[in-house]
Image 1 (cartoon, helix red, strand yellow):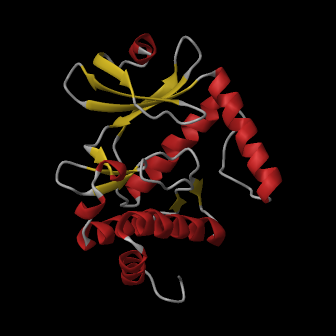
Image 2 (spheres, one colour):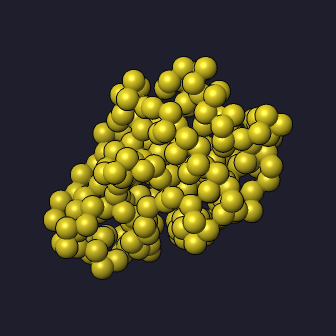
Image 3 (cartoon, helix red, strand yellow):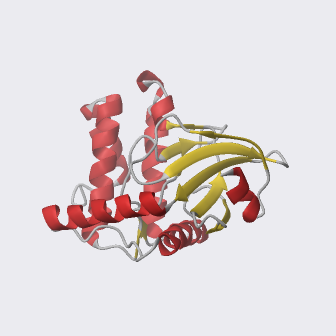
Amino acid sequence: MRAGLADLGVQVTDLQYTDRQPLASLVLTGTSADGARLFVTALGRDAWSSRKWTLLWKRAWYQDQGSQFGSDRRQQIEHEALAMLLADQGGASVPALVTIGMTERDDAVLVSELLDHTLDGVADDAVDDEALDAIWNALGELHEAGISHGSLDADHIWFDSAGRPALMGFADAAINPSPDQLHSDMAALLVLTAATVGKERAIAAARRANTDDEL
């Protein structure tokens, strides 16, 4: 991975795998030579095959069109980057994109800014109403930018050092999403926040961010 990042012009002083790895990609964090903190997603041949079969199974079992994934891992990583760029251009809270590309070992790599910590790293009793409102606002910004996330969970909601949330992990994002895809994001966030702070506070936060008809 160090050599692959160097192929893309990114020199790192340290690099490590995250404790929890997704099923169909490799995820690492590191620091560039100029001190920037980096979040790295890589798709190798085996990872891409696993992801493609998982999505096809989901489509067959749930009659779900799934995410807008391409026919190869280069297209997948470029789709993720496009979703991030469009989200950022539309005013949504997402990390800065550093670079994407194919390494000499034929791995597809996306490198973005690494923020401070995930929602999973925050104690449940430390998630106040202000944080809940900020997370719902981040999702609203993403939808206003014409993007659905597709896989919202505690690992994909990050906070910077000032406590501002941002959304990461756009492997399952859809551009110009359907109403069902937007509603799936809302349902996922409602369930996630209910599991974190309890159903009463989660429902109250959802109602502050959305109309009852939308919910």
